[in-house]
Length: 84
Image 1 (tube, rainbow, N blue to C red):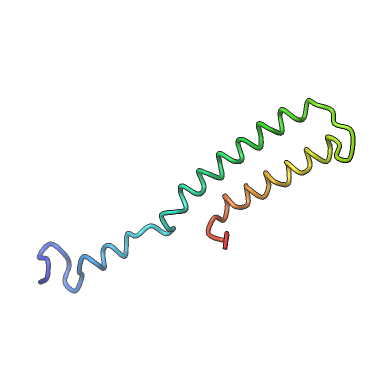
Image 2 (image 1 turned 60 degrees about the vertical axis):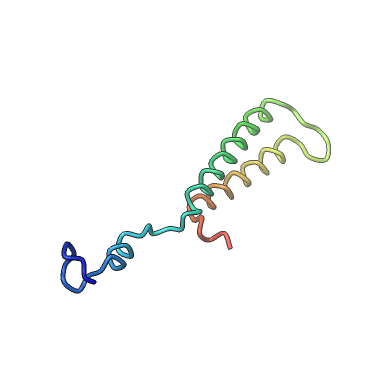
């Protein structure tokens, strides 16, 4: 039965489809999780930047790795639906 409050030829399913979010429900929690990871990586980087490392991996290597990992997380946050 047609709802008298809706325009002619329009049903509730049409309205629901029109206002569906553009991204799946999992995107927001996933991006929040990535933000927490990015914050933790940044904190680790700050802690390790003040230390000196010698050996197979020196401080530059470790900080470079963290920078790369942080960039990867930023890219995942910018395009979360590309994770597959």
